[in-house]
Structure formats: C-alpha cells, structure tokens
Image (cartoon, rainbow, N blue to C red; front, side, top):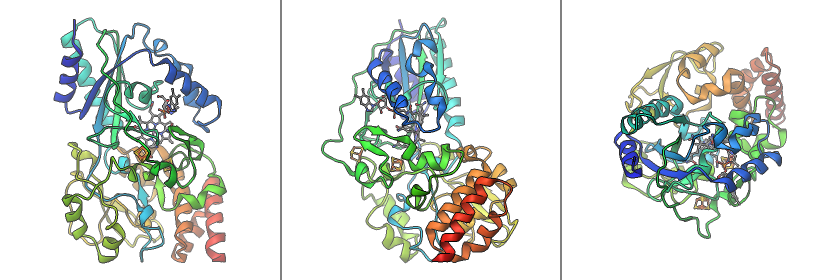
Length: 403
Ligand code: B12
Ligand code: SF4
Ligand code: SF4
C-alpha cells in the first residue's frame, strides 16, 4: 500500500514546489467545464470540446487518484506594464507574460513528471499512470483545486497561500488508491481586484472566464483576426496577459529584493513601478528567468537580427543595447526576423503563436503605442505574404496616420 505522504515526499524531493492528491471524482467541476464549452466560452479552442476531458476514465480506465504538482515560475521582476502604459515611456515597451520569459515549461515539467512516474514505479511496480502538463485532455485545475495545493481564485487561477499563483500545474492519473488531501480553503474573501481590472471583461463573474474575451486567448490561441473592438484593450501585450494575477494580493507585496531591482531602473521606470513591485523570487528553476538578447543591427531596420546572449537566464549583461523578455522595447521585438523567431523561441512557449501571430500582435501593440516611428515597419508588414498580418498592419497604419 503506497501512502499519499510518500508520493508527496517524492514529488517535493524532485523539485516540485507543491504536491497533493485529489480524488478522481470531481464530477461537478467536470460537468461545469462541459457546460462552459457549450456556452461557447472556449472561443476557437476546439480541443477543449474533447469528451475525454469530462471523464478521466476515458483517459485511464483504472484511474482512482490524481497526483497534482505545482512548479513555481516567478522571478524577481516587477509586475506588468498596465501600470506603465505602452506609450508612457520614451521608447514604447511591450509585455510578454511572465510564464513565457524563459524556457518552455512543457519541457521542464514533462521531464520532472517522468521522474515522478519512475519514483512511483519504484514504490509500486505494477502502477498504471498517465502524466499531463497542459496539453492533454484533462481539466487540470478541476483536480488541483481538490488536491490541497491551492484554491481556485476568482480569476480562475489556482492560488497557494504561500506561493501565490505563479506556478504551473502537472497531473498524474494513477490506479493507486491514495488518500486525498483536504481542499485548500478559498481565501479570496471580499476581494474583486481581478474582476475590476481585467481590461476586456473576460472574467464574466467570480470564478468564470469567457476565454473568448481574454487577451491571452487573442494573443496566443486565436489563429485568425483579433476582433477590432478588443485590439485597443490589448495595450502593450505581445504575448499573453498577467493583469488579473498582477493585481492579486496573494502575488504582490513590497519586498526588499524587488526594491533592489528597482534601484537598477531609470528614474522614469522607477516612478512608474514604485507603487507596484513584485515580491521576492520564488522559482528554483534558472531556466524560467528571462532570456537575454543582443541586437546585431539597428532594431527597426529591415531584416535586422538578434542573437541570444546567454542560456543562463540569470546572467545579467552590462551591454547597454542588450534586452531581455522582461518588458522589452517594442522595436527590439520587432527586430526579430522569421529565422530569429524560430531559433530564439525553439524552446520557448512563444513558438506556439508562430511568426505570423507574432507579427499580428506587434501590429496591434504598435498601434496602441501611438508612436509614428513604427510607420515604416508597419508599411513593410502591410506587404507581408500573410493576409492576417497585412490586415492588422493596415488597421494599425490607418489609425497611426490619422493620429
Ligand atoms: C484553455 C486554457 C487557457 C485559456 C482559458 C483559461 C480559462 N480560465 O479557462 C486561456 C488561453 C485564456 C488561458 C490563459 C492562461 N493560462 Co491557461 N490553460 C488552459 C488549459 C489548456 C485548459 C483550461 C480549461 O480547461 N478551461 C476551461 C475552464 C472551465 O476550466 P478552468 O478554468 O480550469 O475551470 C475550473 C473552474 O472554472 C471551475 N469552476 C469555475 N466556476 C465554477 C462554478 C462551479 C459551480 C463549479 C462546480 C466549478 C467552477 O470549474 C473548472 C474545473 O474546476 C489549462 C491546462 C489544462 N489542460 O487544464 C491551462 C492552464 C489553466 N493555464 C495556465 C496558465 C499559467 C495560464 C496563464 C497564466 C498564461 C498567461 N499568462 O497568459 C493565463 C491565465 C489566465 C487566467 N486568469 O486563467 C495554467 C494555470 C496554473 C494555475 N496556477 O492556475 C494551466 C493549468 C496550465 C498548466 N499546466 O500550468 N489558458
Ligand atoms: S489574463 Fe488578462 S484579459 Fe485574461 S482574464 Fe486575466 S486580466 Fe483579463
Ligand atoms: S485578485 Fe482578489 S478576487 Fe481575484 S483571485 Fe486574487 S484574491 Fe481572489
């Protein structure tokens, strides 16, 4: 008989920050997920309609328990630029979601989950398991919220009282009969900060997101045209959105390490960030720190290129022209050629958007910056072979010129 304690202990030894056991029967939540899809809240994410998602026995018929693990990706950098409007700085800046600053979490989590599977096989040689991180037909948060590792916040993220919500989830379905942990109590209380600050109204009520209105959906998952109504609300977000987690009191506090980071910022950035700083770094995974690059030529030139400076993401550089994925300038991101994009993001979650999606998103943020220096870049994008890129570039040009 394998104990839940032994499983949790193995997971923590392998470097996971959180581990807990959920029962297989979270049917009420899975039913909620099915109805959520029926309402069309999934937009064009058709994979969320897979019937296997609503019955884990269709994935592993012998499943009796679900091991849930969390891996923190937080790094000691301030919160997103919604406090620093895209046009406020002399050089407009972009926002890339915190989770995508470093190496692809699928790769890192998958390797760790395989180690945990091997550890389970040591404990119980005949064990049956199926491991998932993000991409399988499993509603991961439905299990996570019953595993004791956190409660589901009104922003729909799983939040841990000590770690906040900046962590990835991984789940292992198993035929082992493990004693489930007690669910963590909901500590949102009367707070509604996430609902109030979501720029697109995607959090339609506490605990429920209409994903077809979410900036993460528009900038990562949606392959086609971003509805015009929402484009101005995307602000400086080139990839994903962190706002409803940035405002969450379980993620932020005034900590000395964030203060020391601030000392290295220009006075302009310091005053923009002073009211909202990130708490101390929590990730133990160096690969989650922001990638750093050096431009090879002037960034807004046609065909210019960048090289990745370091694979040790913690390494800071003294080269003034270098930049990282933490709040980079828009023109630095616009300098990536298609080859750069493929090479640089080969092991990054950003590759999911593909180069055409990257250019589409840049067109929207350039327009939102109101900066006419982007006109030549947008004129070239308006000639691109992809119709979606052309359409977004033309939209941006029209508005920048009329300004
Ligand atoms: C599709 C998807 C998205 C979509 C939709 C998100 C959403 N809220 O549904 C988009 C593209 C918008 C998205 C965005 C992000 N995502 Co995402 N996403 C997923 C994915 C693949 C499926 C989520 C899903 O099933 N949604 C459908 C809804 C119904 O499910 P759910 O939100 O999990 O809902 C539960 C609750 O809503 C609950 N519920 C709500 N109300 C009620 C009411 C009642 C009565 C009941 C019973 C239940 C209930 O029921 C559901 C089950 O418990 C999961 C991985 C996976 N396979 O599960 C990652 C996942 C949820 N995403 C993750 C992350 C990190 C993000 C982003 C932070 C990335 C970014 N910065 O851009 C944002 C966060 C935005 C946010 N506030 O959630 C992490 C979340 C980690 C965490 N700590 O919670 C996951 C788990 C991936 C992973 N393996 O780490 N994501
Ligand atoms: S990720 Fe951004 S757009 Fe999506 S619900 Fe949160 S605040 Fe709203
Ligand atoms: S911002 Fe407030 S309501 Fe939203 S998830 Fe965090 S604690 Fe809950």
